[in-house]
Length: 432
Image (cartoon, rainbow, N blue to C red; front, side):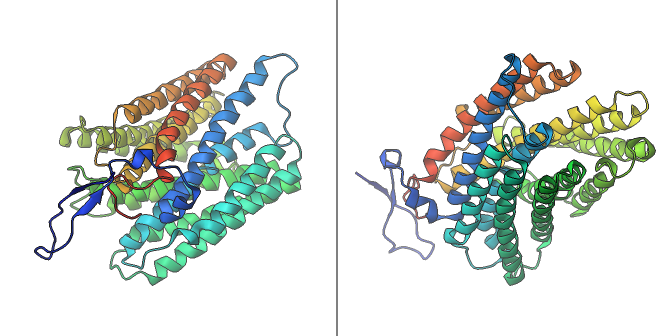
């Protein structure tokens, strides 16, 4: 049964009441409903890849603890881990979000979910091949990555067309994200070429570019644009001088590639890296302190975004320490800690907050951050703490496995909450 509540008409009356679905949770889950809106299809594909990664990585680590059972690798394990954890699920969250929010940002026509189907199909097929053949055959793994790259290239092209068709006066954030998505397509092609040719150095460069010119700029631009538009009383951190923070962060991120790609001996760039990352850490942590004083962090969504932003400052601080320790031999551990503070802390926390908010809002739920999501968020923070502890203990296998298991539990629990929404009707009876 449906129940009905009257909804005031913006035209002054006469409009019939809008149905509110009290039984949406009882509706059968259908694949066809993934095509009702781009976020449903993109987020579903991302969630499937996230869940797969959450199952795969602890299993791969667990085999190391059993003598004679270590997982076989056809590619460098650190490259397999970085590619899967960095690039297999986050871009699909980007795609679902950009085809949902992008038209509103740009004052363009809505994008149907079907436009995302070729990208999603290539993405899931390509990463499935990669995941299997990373343990079997490097060239087949490269082929799988190339299929995913083709799918993402199609998405980047479609988003560029949407950007060109937009009529909004301010398209700054969309342009930054569009350029980053184009860089992401190039990164995937270069990484695939490196795997196919057996050139680990090429893969390493592609990973550095993908981290700093693709993933990080998308998160930075989205957070700068969206923090004041998420339904909480949060002014822009740079409201007096719009966009200075965005351009400053993008400049710092751009400079990380020559500093971290390995093309130049790290010790030679250490002084410049130490100065740049120290300045970046001080800026981000100062802004975080200002933000904490100005806002009510008892609002859970705001607290999640705040914690993610603090992790960005911690990542820069650890990188500065790594640069300062380049001559003592301690820089590698600090760089690894910085990488996980950035990837698990900044990316992971912001992703969880944004996707939860968008999923709940698009499903007609006013309360996004319930106790379940709040618990998974702090599970993620516990996993980050364990991962950093493992770094300080020389990547101790037990600590490393514990971090992976806690992360997997948090991500699987979070995914289970959301994936059931994507194939069911909105809870408020509205289309989409």
